[in-house]
Amino acid sequence: MDYHFETEVRVRFAETDAQGVAHHAVYLVWFELARIDYLARFRGGYPELRAEGTEALTTEVHVRYLAPARFDDRLTVRCTCGELRGARFRFDYAIERDGQKLADGWSLHAFVDARTHRPTRVPAWLVDEIATAERPSGP
Amino acid sequence: MDYHFETEVRVRFAETDAQGVAHHAVYLVWFELARIDYLARFRGGYPELRAEGTEALTTEVHVRYLAPARFDDRLTVRCTCGELRGARFRFDYAIERDGQKLADGWSLHAFVDARTHRPTRVPAWLVDEIATAERPSGP
Amino acid sequence: MDYHFETEVRVRFAETDAQGVAHHAVYLVWFELARIDYLARFRGGYPELRAEGTEALTTEVHVRYLAPARFDDRLTVRCTCGELRGARFRFDYAIERDGQKLADGWSLHAFVDARTHRPTRVPAWLVDEIATAERPSGP
Amino acid sequence: MDYHFETEVRVRFAETDAQGVAHHAVYLVWFELARIDYLARFRGGYPELRAEGTEALTTEVHVRYLAPARFDDRLTVRCTCGELRGARFRFDYAIERDGQKLADGWSLHAFVDARTHRPTRVPAWLVDEIATAERPSGP
Image (cartoon, rainbow over all chains, first blue to last red):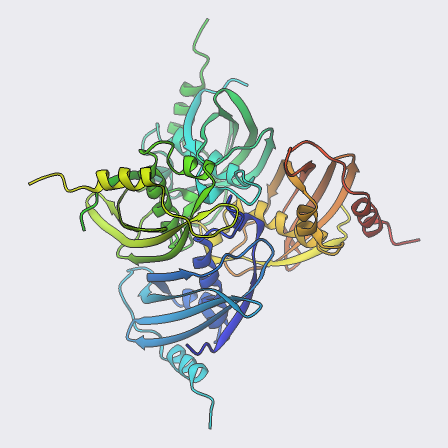
C-alpha cells in the first residue's frame, strides 16, 4: 500500500485502558484525525464540507491490531484516499511507531446531504483535489 | 446531603486507564447518566426537552475523588436536584460501591434555546415535577 | 447468523457527536460490553480470567454501519462466539433497535499471558462453557 | 491568575456531542494533556515518574464553562502548578480560543506509590524543577 499522507498523534493517558495499552476503539478516532488532516489541505477541509451542508458518514471500518501502542507514544498515521465513486470513498491507513507498523485498516464513507441524510455526490472540486494529491508522482 | 434519586452504572473496560482504575473524566459522564435518568421520570425527560427546542448546558462541575472505581464495579450514582431559579439549576451527586462513597460532586446547568443558545426559563411543568420529587416526604 | 446471546445498551449523550448520532467508534465499546456480558455467565467471567493472569487482546475488528443510532436509543447487541482454536476466538455481532439492524460486525481475539503478552491457550473450562452455550439446541 | 505554561489542542470530531459542541467531560482530558506537557519539560516527565514507581492521582477537579468549543477549534490550554506540599500539588487552567477564555478550572493531585497506592512525597528533583519554572521572572 502506498500512503500519500501522514499525520502525527500522541497517545493520551485517557486513551489507555487497564491492560496498560491504548484501547482498541481509539484507533478509529486516530483514523478520523488522519482523514480530517488529509482533507484540511483542500479548501476549508471537512469543516467547509459541513458548512456546505454535506456530511461524510462512516459506513464500514476494518482494523488489524499488530502490536500495542502505549501512553505517550508518538505515532504516525499514514493514509491514502481512493475509490471515489459517486457518493462513496475509501481510506486506507497504517499506524506506525518508529517505523514499526502497529495497526492497519480501512474505512468506507458516504457523502450525504446534512439535512435529508440522502446520498449526494462528492463535490467535483474535492474529487479533483484528491485525484491530484493521490496521482503517482513518478517519471 | 439527602439524595432523592439513584441509578446504577457498571464500570466499562473502555473507561479504565493504565492506572488500572476508571479514568477521572468518566465520572462526569456518570453524573450525566444520573441527570438523564432523573429527568426521564418526568414526561419525555431530557429527549423531550430537546424536542421542545431547549438544551441544558453544563456551566460548572466539581468532583472529589475519594477512592478508585475498578473495571466491572457496580456503582450507585445518587443525585438530587435543587436551586431551580429562572434558567438555572444544580445537581448534587454521590457515587457509591457497596455503601462506600467513591466520589461526590455537583454541577450547574443553564437552560437555553437550542437555536439561539440564549437563556430560557426552565419549563413550568419541569419545575413542578422536580419540586414534587424533591419535596421532603414528611414527619 | 444465529446469535445465541444478547445484551441491552442505551445510547449515552456523551456518545453522540456533532452529526447528532452515536459516534462510529462507540460501536466497538458496545461490542466489548456484549463480550463481557457474554463471558460473565461463566465462572467469574472476564474479571476472573484477568485475575487468573490472562488477558484477551483484540486483534482485528470489522463493523458495517447500516443506520444511525441516536441519543437515548435502547439498543440490543446480539453476539455469538465461535472459532475457538488454541489461543484465538471470534465474536460476531448485530446491533438492533426495535428489530431493525443498525450495524453488524465481528472481532478476533487472542488469549495472552498478562505478564509476558505471549499467546496462551483459552482455558479448557471456558472452551467447554462456550461450546455448551453455543450448541445447537436441537432438532 | 498568572499561567506560566501553555499547550495547544484541536477539538476532535469524536469529542463533540449532539449539541454540536465539545462535550463537557472532554475538558478534563485537555487539562490532563496540559499537565503532561507541563511535566514533559522535566527529565522524562510523567512517563518517567511512572517508571520510577509513582503515580499521580487526581483527587479533585473543578471546571467553569464560559463559552462552547466547536469541532476543529484550535485551543490554547494555559496552566500553572503550585501548592506543592508533601504528596500534594495543584494545577490551575484556562482554555482559550483566539484570546477568548472558554473555560477555567483547577485540579488537585496526590503522589502515591504505584504498588501500594499510599501517599509518597513529590520527588525533590520535581519540586525543584517546578519551583524554578514557576518562579517570578522578574523585577
